Length: 303
Image (cartoon, rainbow, N blue to C red):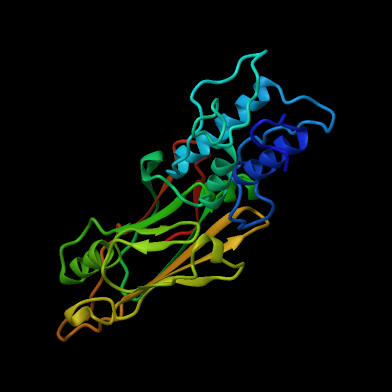
């Protein structure tokens, strides 16, 4: 590569930088690719063309924005060039470039493409996807999906640090059974957060699957949370499982859940019902550095 102190930058040098930067910020190549922020790619320069001030400025601005999003430390000039200015190699060795090193900066944002500065993220408040409308005493199921506009949009959401947040609430009822399910939802499960390669929960019960992240999803349902015998006391046998899969045809991440009330009433009682009103809520966390569309959520089978 001829890009170095004292040399004129060639189109091939510039385009090499562009190729790497576009891999980071441009469209992903295929589903669950870990590269691609879904942003407009930078234009290359023809072999006989000139690297002009606006192209140079766009390249530097794109690298700096990616570094801000990632929390990557780089050293590039703050001021953009104007038409007529000389484009000097920023290789960290010339007097004019001081410590600026474009090559090192491009390498760094590529290496850190899946890093996220938490200060560059915003939380989209959870909304209710479904509410149980009747009392129940055995097993209930629900299914819902998160809709993306395209494969590129889905990958961009997760590649820029996006997460799907899932939580349950049980606001009604004051029986021991109601209180048990309320505790399961808030204390044992808490909020489940699915990211590109991470899956966490804020609760302390059950088991989450390390493979049920966005990059690990398949087209078949697999458990992301299993709460077998997750209840307490006489309700210890109560169970909950949450599954997820990826629908690449319709650009959806599907979830379903099964809640099982395994408690057997003690005589003389013959009924031990769970009150109506349990809800499934879904929210998101996404990049605030880049323009990332918020997906929608739809219930396909009610509780």
